[in-house]
Image 1 (cartoon, rainbow, N blue to C red):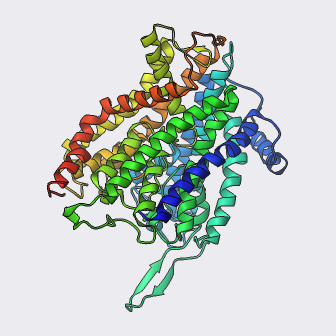
Image 2: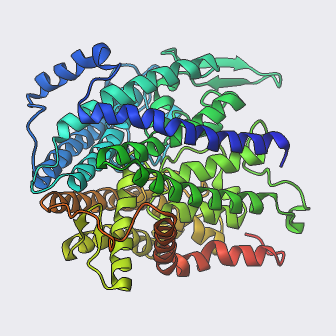
Image 3: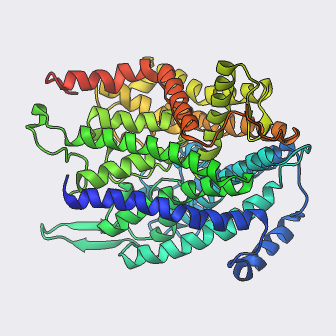
Amino acid sequence: MTTIDVFQILLFIALIIGLTPILGNYMNKVFAGNKHFMLPVLGWLEKLCYKFIKVNPDEETNWKKYAIGLLMFNLIGFVFLFLIQIFQAYLPMNPAHLTNISWHSAFNTAVSFMTNTNWQGYAGETTMSYFVQMIGLTVQNFVSAATGIAVILAVIRGISRKSTDKIGNFWTDLCRSTIYVLLPLSILFSIVLVGQGMVQNFNAYETAHTLKGIDQTLPMGPAASQIAIKQLGTNGGGFFNANSAHPFENPTPFSNFLQILVIFLIPAALTYTYGKMVGSVRQGWCIFTAMLILFIAGLSISLYAEYSSNAVIGNLSHMEGKEVRFGVANSVLFSVVTTDASCGAVNAMHDSFSPLAGMVCIINMMLGEIIFGGVGAGLYGMVVFIILTVFIAGLMVGRTPEYLGKKIGAFEVQMAIIANLATSFAILVFTAWAAVSSYGLSGLNNAGPHGFSEILYAFTSAAGNNGSAFAGLNANTLFYNLSLGVVMLIGRFGVIIPVLAIAGSLAKKNITPSSVGTFRTDNWLFIGLLIGVILIVGGLTYFPALSLGPIIEHLLMNNGIIF
């Protein structure tokens, strides 16, 4: 690594730490309904939204009605996105005259963008019209991210309130998240990206005459506006097939650094918002610290693996599948951040990473995308692990577990276990199915443990609502489009519904004042316990599968055997 590589990584960490309280404090004002500087600018739009959908923003609901509103909204988004894909050829803003999308690919894509996964089994510039990219995919980038924020707001209210069944209004949370947080940041970031040279137009595709004397078709389109929310909303998915490795989607090293930074921006800041809203900023910083430690650990292992000398490749730098203009360090940093944050955007092909670096990406997703994670989703996933941690701690000391004054009972633990099992079930069962079926094996690019890793990565990415791919698996088939779509649904709503149930249950309970015997959840001891539970649960659940893939591939590679 060079000095500039080390500096960039340290600057990235410093900026995340520094920006967290600034943005976190602003979001606290937004979601608490207090005055903030964007209210005079966009307050009219919020009121217009409530009038259009005929909703009273001050009317709160219990967790079941909150969940029904969330599910119905997402169902409408799925149906709309599915329909505009299968009728794409008849819709406007299609200068390349792209044909209609097959029903199974449309199903997969509609589920993918609705669940904030943004898995793509297609090449964006040769498959999706500008209309579908803007009205369909970009809109879902906003509202799927806002849905994740809405869920963590419901959880926060469940923790901070007492003796009530009200956890908020889904429509209010959705509108405020979109209008005051995602929209302003996206507009600002889009302008910056255009300034760096990113494409943003409605032109037909251009034809360039190359130095070799052949014609090359250059895709155009409104890329910057989609890429901004793609990163800010931890959506992933690319306007172009090469994703953030494409020069029109990620033109410069500076744009690359900014894209990495904004992936973590909102998820990190939400930890501070969480602390403010539950009445203890220290609690938010403890969660932030646990996430940061896990991030640094994964980044360190990946950097070690990618910079390690290996005779199999002639002791050269691992540059296969990486952009020369970004290099190894920026590619590794991007890969760790995007798989930590359930973003799915990539600036390098993870299929070409060393086995250990590829394993870090898989583990980041297997842990539940809780290392900062998706906007909102990472934090409510971490709350699930917090409940499991205080439950285990309570068993060890013989006390009734509690968190922030709320007694953690059997129902909360059961829901936390269901949320945790939902993703592991989807990953392991569907991976096993694909690994022994002709439908699953037909899409492989490699044999042996690396081929197994391609399958494992795909279903892990889908279940974690990440959306990134190893890039060695042909997933645009009937089998993978349908199976991955089902796994995305399990990974999203199989977690959201139990989490909302936890919020509703906690809201009904009284808050017990802390005492000398209260188990503290805002110190280094709890941070250590929390990290330990995360790693133990993940290790016990997924170690056998990892042993069949990246672990054995690493051992074989060191003996000169590659796949």
